[in-house]
Image (cartoon, helix red, strand yellow):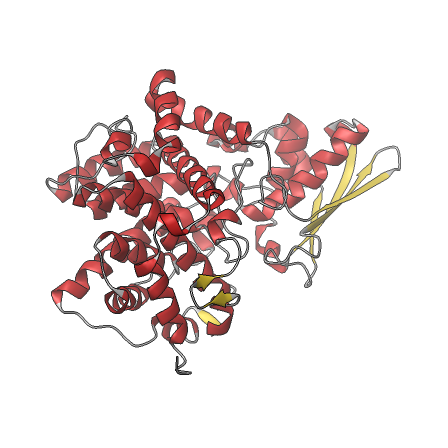
Length: 457
């Protein structure tokens, strides 16, 4: 192979076009099935929010007839771009979708909704859907590894388009050249997203992955229409508009002749059990461990000093005004955890955000940053917490890999319980268990509709 600077895209596109499930380990397949289950659960949980119910109805009106399911709603089947738009938007709304510390961001919510929708549209098998999820996930996470995003850029959506395009190309049977073109087209269609909506609590932010899925699927089809792409879409985007640099060698680090060496990225993900931004998670784990060890009550806390990666300086507002902004407030999330012992979705509901006891403790949280802390590394703490009590004692703790990360996993039964809690309201208990079973044999389903037929709400 020559040394053309875009060789990394050739490697990625060949990986997408040539990878088959029979080439992958059972551990990869098991991880992928769990990621699909977790993502479907996040979608079903978020589907109950009023704006997502309205979006589902709007999508049905705008789309016209199609074969793709809007999860959690009985509005009829739609075109895959609209199903992916609605499902990905719902899936991020509760901040319970999984992610990748190695690549940054949340690969599955940018890949899985679109992969399922396109699989339905083309009438393919569960096996085909799982292949598309795995390769799309790998592409999304690896492109993220190469990106040095600008500080004001929120990773949701920005490099998810390329993963959505890769998954779609896989399902459409594209060869490596057509796959590369689809991925480059997708990069030129990437949304440009900032952190501002998160911090203000503007729910347009929840459209970030939905828009990314919509554009990524479209990109794969635009190649069929004759549209052409730049030669190196990621470098074009991330060395100028959205990034401060892009490292193509980092994208394919540890890559052999036949593809990635070692576990695929979908095996190295994290699962969320706190319904808030990832940067809260090591902080919450460290603080809750101290409370469990010592048994102190929240009323006995005089002051809390938190040290975390530099980005947390924008997440220091102790008085968020609504559910979404509370999920991006470290003082609020920490205070809610210590006062009410709660970090799941209900802890952040609008009616809870103004709790006086939580607000009082949040005002006593001081946020500091350590430039050596970085969520992409595991050899250094991701958070330190020092809790000073009224009796004069100071309790100190730290966390690296948060509980739920592949480096610090929780029992699989916790993943299933999380799914049940998110899906039950939409599906009922019996259908919820049927979905768990169907995802568990996804790669043997003759049609992905055996799964999606259970997910209409």
